[in-house]
Structures are given as C-alpha cells and as structure tokens.
Length: 285
Image 1: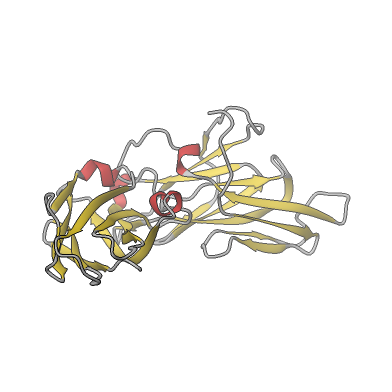
Image 2 (image 1 turned 60 degrees about the vertical axis):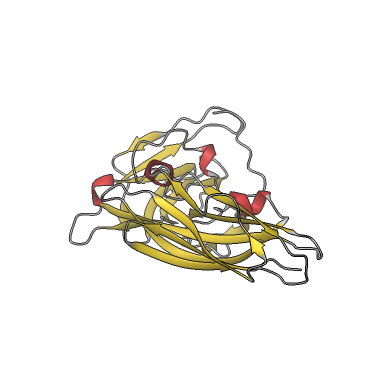
C-alpha cells in the first residue's frame, strides 16, 4: 500500500531528552514510555512522534472475528535505534475468554514513507496481552500492529449511537441515523464525515461471536403520534458485517403528517439474539 493518508488522525509529538519520558495520545490509552538514557543520539533531545493509523492503512482483508480490532501506530523517526527497549501500549476492543493463555502476533513494518507497507511477524518481541491492551517492548521505531488469537475471543466491544440532522421548524421531515462503530480511538467514521448529523446518545454494547447471530436495529416508538415512519421499522445487520469490524449505520426518516411545532422523540433498540439495548434520539432545533 502506497501513500496512506495520515491526515485527521490522532497523534502526539514531544521533545524527549536523555532523561526519558512518556508520550500519551490524549483521550486514548495509547502510550509510549521511554526509559532514561535510551536515545542513542549525540544531541540533547530527539523529536518523537506517535500516530494512530486508520484501519484502512494497515488492514485490507478481514480474516477472523478478531481482525481489525486493535490499534496500530507509526513511531517516528523511523528506524530510530534505542539503547534500551521502550514500552508501547496499544488498546484493543475485544472481550477475551478467562482462564486461557493470552496470545497475540506482533507485526512491524520498516518501510520508508510513501513506500509499500511490508509487515513482518516478529516472534521474539516481548509483549504482555491483557483484557484491554497489549504492551510491546521495542528496540527501534517502526510501524507496529498486533493481532489477537481468535480462539481466545468471546466478543467485540462496539459503540451504538443515535444521531439526527438539526430540525428547522416547521420542517415536516426528520432524518435520523442509528449505527455502531468499534470502541477504539479514532473510530466513528459516519459521525466524522457527516457533521450535519448531531450525536444524540452513545452506549456500549458487546457483540458476541458464539452463535453468529446478526444485529438488529428496531424503531420501538415515536412521540408525539403526529410523526410517522413509513419504511420497515427493523433493520438487520449481518453477523459478518459486524464481525469484520465494518462500521454501519441505519437511516430512518420521519414525516410529520399534521404540521405543528412538536419535535419527535424516538426510542430504538439494538439487539443481538436475546440481548437488547435501548437508545433514544431527539433532533435538535
């Protein structure tokens, strides 16, 4: 893959001296700890950069339920050699089974900027995988990602959201979206790319692997009754769509059959098999 666009992604840069330090991207659990006397540099400090990569930059194909469910980063300067290992912590959005050995595969790419990605699995890289993140010890800077063994995964952590376009009364059409995205830093493409839709609610949901049940988004009720929804009130999202970590949003359009100044309040459920989550939306005016 050439020329992966890195605009509008989460990143941090800091000058780090021989004293060492810690970089943490704000509002994420992504961090890099640099011990003292680690930088093999003659100068007094080094400008360190850490960027979270969009999934499309490093995952082209989904091969398992656990694919596309971890954070990958680029560390700069590329190929910076270190006198001591640095500690990189990258979160994931998977619920892991208990009482099993937690295994992951670590991948690195040392390609030049604007060159092809060349991921190589490293089998001798120390790491610790836990219920929320993977901590990896690195001897030089590069692009880093990891994959979790699908056999130890129970579920995927996602965020269900409702959003609506602003309602300009006396408009008689209300446009609403109900969707989901991974519970990972930088996720939520629909909300990022459609600023005209205002977020109403956002709730956590566990999407289970066992049974391969689809997700269903259903409109339960609309108040007041002057607002009607004519399309099917239930949308089914295939299991494989969610399992592949593909973000998805269901549109709902309401029409006010009797003109007035009332703003609709809608209640939806997002469900998988016998597990249900209730979520609401009321367009802003």
